[in-house]
Image 1 (cartoon, protein in one colour):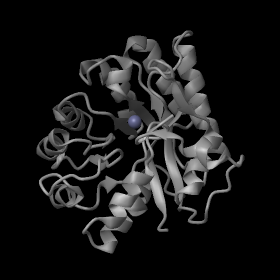
Image 2 (cartoon, protein in one colour):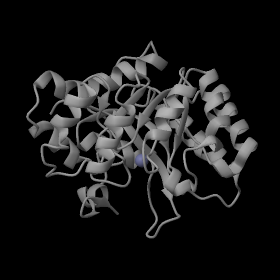
Image 3 (cartoon, protein in one colour):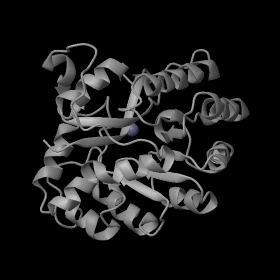
Length: 286
Ligand SMILES: [Zn+2]
């Protein structure tokens, strides 16, 4: 199997939806190992426990930072999380996590965190911009907001998560963000069976083949469905290699110039059964 690198990988628990879903660092590594994924950019889960407010966010940041330290060849860079309701305290914690823990930016899930990708994130983005960092943003309706961020914060690199989950989102991202050079894209959760008006070939024809990347959206989805789609798509092998891992390697090296991917298989710290790793209700993992 060709190597895959995952730019969209959540570690932790989502408790704001039933049933709660999540994964430890070890189970994440086991999932990666079983499906040819040789590295990832980890970030926290949205909708995580928040009983202690920003202290819980700090714990999430430390989990990601520790994973990156322990497995620096597999997790070369990591992201924090932006919770807009923490306001300046959240901005300060992000700054601390970037300075002290070495995180390179944040992930934001507007749906799970209850905000809209508007001006409420400008304080967080300014911190990332001061470090020329990276943000993984999930869509909140149109990607117009992400295009506006990309203009306002030109030193930040953005990834739009699961850019092609449905036809409307796919076409909107092409229209709004196709020309923004500091916006990259992942194809997590792309459903099978898209017609040629929004399939993978259409996405590559319209966004080019150098900023589209594989993403798993673990722990929510069985990402092997997306790998199968990339492998069977009517695209040349060089493009498949780029989407599978080469584009991601180029992206990571913007932030860690000393890193090169380790292409050998991961040895996970625990041997999970297949059911434990892949028990799913449709594409959605339990
Ligand atoms: Zn996600």
